[in-house]
Length: 132
Length: 290
Image (cartoon, rainbow over all chains, first blue to last red; front, top):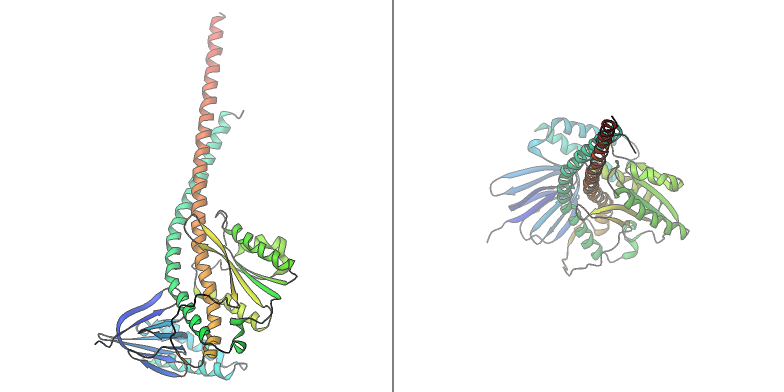
């Protein structure tokens, strides 16, 4: 029996990625990374800024996401996100802009701990992208 | 009776108007195809979003402590209405239909002695509503600068709504837009987004989901996004409707102009013939009298 399942990544404007031959997906869920294999139990969670890794038989793809919802059901993983891009076509300017805007946000005083955590995390991930 | 020269001028003017309406029709047709495509592409997102929310709200047992965006504030005193219209005219009854729908809702609210607040998105809606409802309009947003409908704009509107909700500025929120059925038919819609109307459609998929973190937290993260998504969906439907409506209106205008040109041409030919006949009679009777 095959150990493959489906993944659909959609953003509000279009369907971003749809594959039916992946065997593992690692998603940056808000409480830590989750690796999903076939026949995972149904789960709903949401994302923090991070990198989605999609492993299919032929290749490995990585995407940066800022936020989103994931749902896994009947061996289909749906990712709903409003901001996503392929690490391969990462735009250097865009990344550095995002870093500086997040840092500017961080320097404000009136943000709560959770938001501070998310922003810190975002800066960290974006920096790791820009180094590669 | 207009002179020959006047008629000729009118025919030329109608013909050039016809050229313009024809061009507008063709532009609208091209844009419509794109808008329809976009609307279709955007559908999976909002559908999936709805599904997730449905599944989540089913699994919430403690209704009283559920997020207020889902179940409402418990009151229905202040109504916030988001009226989504186009930024341009010349599109038939498109804007007027939305306004009509919205107005009947406004009247109902006012007659029930509830407070009404209006946010208009798109300048045509503001133009039409400011005469009668100026004092109710709290905000007027226009995305004239953005060439295409994008999620970023919808998110801006969504954030305004959330902000107002958090400040307890309204209890119920409804959006008005045109739903695209086909090129000829667009249906004005009224949709309540806060509190979320729970879909009765409880299809029996009793998937026991694992939630991480718990349901409440996911919901409170998800619901604001859902509002932006609904607005985005409405904007996409609206833009397809606008182009469809404009196409039909301009097609009619072109046809009417054609008819008018035909009629004017006949009139022109007739009076030309009449002038010739008159001159002939004059010559003949002149010759006879010699």
